[in-house]
Image (cartoon, rainbow, N blue to C red):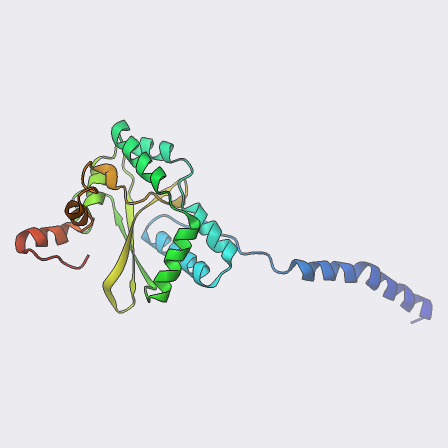
Amino acid sequence: MPRIVRRIAFLTWFVVVLPVATMAACRGPKPARMHAYADGTAGLQSFMSDFAAAAAHGPASLATEMGTSLVLPDPDLFFSSYYPAEIADRLIAEYRARPPAAAALIDLLRTQQQNGLRVFRVERFDQVADENAVGYQEYALKEQTKLLPLYSLRAQRPDTDAGAQHLFNFVYVDGAWKYAGPMKSIKEGLMNDPRLDALASLRAKARQSYFNQGTVLPN
């Protein structure tokens, strides 16, 4: 190759190729972004498993994005769309008093992972008479003006459900998962009485066991 041709080729690489390669290296890999998740128990389980992995191992930006996505963008519109005005007002006040925050959800997932609660068990409720629903969920389903299934998430150890942590209620609206909170103000007076609150937080079959025998089944 003639010297002049080699020189032109070198200059072309130095002026054009090297800056482009350097810029690409500085940018690094594109940050992970949250993808869409399906409705149903498998969809929520997939979402929470990915969320827990991001919370424990990163990337932090993905964990924050997923945590933020669970917050209801308009609690007033959401609760008034599914509940009578008087009940909706109570639920809105409850939600606004303790809105879910991405940082708090991330900390919760990290703590669960550290404590060995690495398995997520998801349940879907769309009928009032379901012995696996907790009392608050039964009331919440009964009072709806139009049906919206409620989902429970229990984080537990792989070998036992003893010590599982229950987080409810998740809902799937507008193609995305949201956390609507426990909705304990669905029935006035329950959450202000420790004993009634504890009973309303149990599954129906566990409450029946308590009333019949004075014992409580694992919840």
